Amino acid sequence: MANREKILNILEYNNTKECGFWKGRPHKDALKQYLFDLKLKDEEELSAFVGDDLKWINADSSYKHPEGTPVFDTMHGQTRISDCQPGVFMDTTSIKEVEAFPWPDLKYINLDEYIAEIKQARENNYALLGGFWSPYFHIAADFFGMENYFIKMYTDPKIVEAVTEHIVEYYYQANKMLLEKAGEYIDIIFFGNDFGTQLDLFMSPEMFKKYVYPGVVKLTNLAKKHNKKVALHSCGSVYRVIPLLIDAGIDVLHPIQAKAKNMDAKYLNDNYKDDIVFMGGLDTQVILPFGSEKEIEEEVERLMDIFGPNFILSPSHEALLKNVSTKNLMAMANAVHKKKRK
Image (cartoon, rainbow, N blue to C red; front, side, top):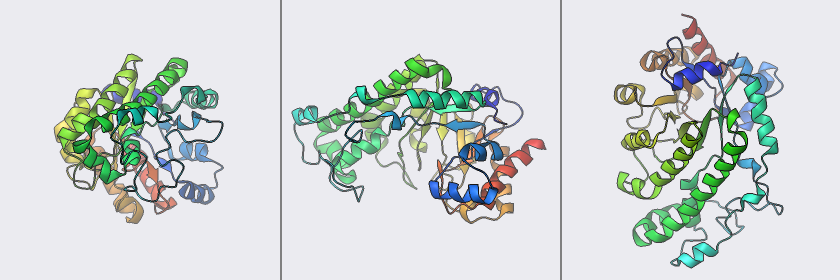
């Protein structure tokens, strides 16, 4: 059974018995296989079957433009085939051009379906990860093309700042609307931007602090005004800015990419165990897709021993891809619950 109270205690460092568990969100192809193999009808049944304590419900689909226009049309209707493909602001040098862009209008947000879904999650006793995903770092990169985005931080800083501010402001206002209408049903505001590679940040900590960190602070402060905990998702090696994230008020760091530099459990626990809750950590690059059931069980036990009870075990990626078999999904879940019983 889902255990919201346990998760809330973990977030307050009051948990003394057992860590939390979230299987993550299966990719549609993986989910189809899991449901077939386990003879279940939907992800709701799968969550109950594996013993999830949390449920993530993303509000992004609440934006419904009547013409089907995406929230941010970074390519003027063209299909993006590469992260480095030039976006609409690649050659922009004028703030007026940025201001003239058709930025998203809040009037196209309809929260009715979303609110009904989060109410149901609360009735099922899940701790709820909610809010708009707010991937402003990635969207800003798409508006320029990723390589060009990093270059423009030096050549056209005011343009990068103006574009980023528009993106962050939309997510700030969208989350504000959601929190005012249905904040009582949300336990944790969850937003995500992948700031790291396998070895380091995409940019220096100085550039991170100038262009990216203000958005973290703004979205976190909004959640705190509504007395919500905040979970930040970032894949990759982000150890160099964890102190900044803690200073911003981030309560939970996800997904702990285990094979990335200085993102191993011992390093993180030794340095930050009293300052931030870790969620994730079970390697999805090697162990979950290719490991044996015994190897998965041993790794689950190792992580739980290192982090202790104020920890939420989960895959080191928000999505379970098709290369994670049903057998290995169940090995993870069974290992967590077996360890709890010891």
